[in-house]
Length: 166
Image (tube, rainbow, N blue to C red; front, side):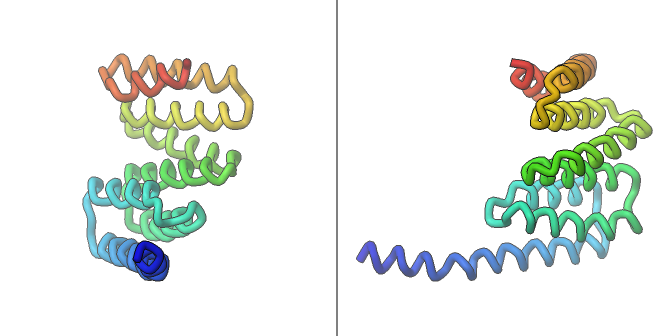
């Protein structure tokens, strides 16, 4: 009985994965009809953390959103998409492209004077430096991010940066 049940589950997995992709497609289509920044951020986080999508699929969905956002979105929206793309590119070990995304997002966060996002982007830049073996640069950026996080009393960023600093 267990073998039959396991076999049935295996047969259902492709349909489940297809349903997940179709759900994401519907969310993107809904986004194109109108959205709030919170809805965009929720969708991007959902794509990035969806374990049913491989990294390449996550990147493809994010790139699809990026094309739309570049035409219709605000600077803040573009920053969110750039950051999400950078996070996915980091998972794919495409560090140069990830760094470019993070630096673009950092510039936008600085232009918007959004301290929380500036700290977040500095931390992402630091992580990319860490992955490429540039430990001094990583430490410098983690410390900058930590300083900003402390100034705005962002406890989760403080803890994340302290953890990354070891």
